[in-house]
Length: 129
Length: 192
Image: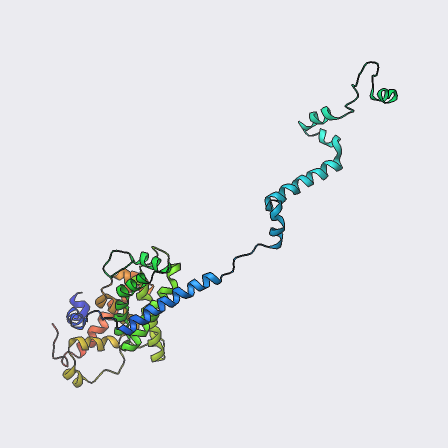
């Protein structure tokens, strides 16, 4: 602090004279403060115990045995794919690269190449008994 | 776990322990900080009972905020000074019934010079002069000269900039010096 700051008055000396030791806490004040601390801690514990466990919604509970959301999503995708294929038919699938070959290989009558002795077709086999 | 004021556990750790239910940590925090808040409140309010109320209230707020305390954001001591000084300011405002910012820098109610000549020593004269300062200036001076806080710490307590604190302190010292100077004779020139 400069002289110009304190207008020729040594404020530092005043502050020094006015300084007092840090007061001691009275018993009553300490008791009150610690009681507050105990009350706040206790109320926090009670609040934590009373806080309801967050319950799952009815939809989540319904889906849980079927694998939850992920399981249901997989089922949904498969169902949608099945319906699509059902409506579109195998012809539509042949236009898909890669899939077309598979469809071709499994299409047609698998008994067309049937041959057993003189019986050359499944129809003959049925006629022969 | 037993704590005393001098042990090395940091305030933040004590607060965390208290939040987990450790009452010994609460006691350590109280012994470490409540006396400083009490000292500040006594100087601001000049009423020991009110000062105790403010101290208890400030500590109560610390207990409540303990679980949400964000380490590193503020010092516990600074936070307590801030809460304590705000509580004091609220009480002073209620007492005066006017906004503290509108309070006159040097009111006319100067105590009788003769009385002061007789009764006051320099310490008391200073306290009387400080009581005539606006609360914010008085708070800044108290924190700086009695609580020995640095200007950045005072800035945190007052939630303002360091430059504003310097300006506040400068104005407060000028007003204080002018007040004391006007009563130089009454003080028996007991000043250097």
